[in-house]
Image (cartoon, rainbow, N blue to C red):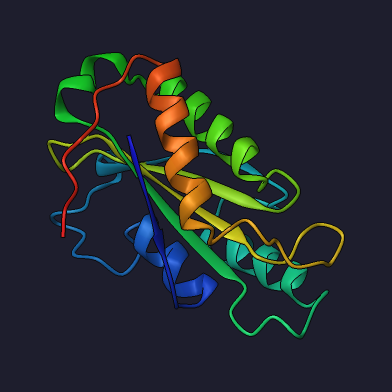
Length: 161
């Protein structure tokens, strides 16, 4: 399992990307992605999700880019092991181990590629209004991914440039 921390972008652009809202609807049909889970969001519709994230981000105006985004990618050979339930469990473990369990998050799985993967959109403003310090920690991300790869008996996918 590899976690890729992505930077820049608004909550709207991140939610639109993971839910394929602004993509070609002939290619990215409702069966090519699925919301697996969320915490702290009021609803499952696009505007509700974005408004929830933006509302919490107003608790701390000093954070200029509060929208966080991480992709968890798995090796193709792990596909049979990765039911939606199992991927949600792994993503939740990742969130907890990264220290992101004290803020809002959304987990969306994409099905349109050979490599299983999901996206985590999260708020860099915690539920207490303080900055989430661990959301962009690449060293911690690598350690957490290695630990979860061992815990769940997963293969390590090749790094993409």
